[in-house]
Length: 84
Image: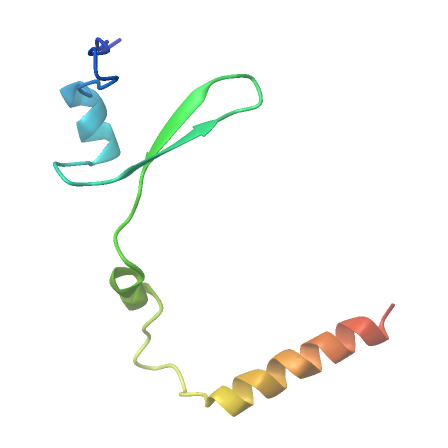
């Protein structure tokens, strides 16, 4: 298992196999979380929201106006509340 040493400034160098696994490079951001069992997990943060926009783009999808979206949300909420 790869290891690293903590510097006097609290810095570490991530070993190459870890960088490759996370697909991270210089300048990328990393997110840390502490699990309930005390383990620390790190994840590569993806880029900006604009970089993610392309995953939602579907040329064949019918365009919907903001008003139509608002109406659909209102109808769904009304339907859900009415079932209680």
